[in-house]
Length: 119
Image (cartoon, rainbow, N blue to C red; front, side, top):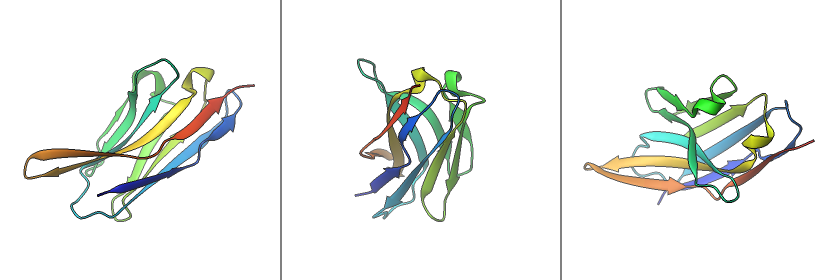
């Protein structure tokens, strides 16, 4: 079973930056896509950014131009560079990995890392 370990969360002032990292281990089959989701208190988990093995990316509209997702396929690691952070970015951020085996999709999740944007 794929394990995902996240790091890089914390407390930052509005306008500041943080970089989240997620490293995958115990990989048997290739990871197809990796991404970051977030969940704020009382809200549903939402996709923030995702990246495929080929480098195609997808972003939540509210983070476009501020967040950048990147990935090292050889190291099965994904990063999320978050700039110009706003209080509404406060949430627990979860790393996600998708593995497709024989047309069946498997999803794996990290334990989550707290990001708090506050003055």
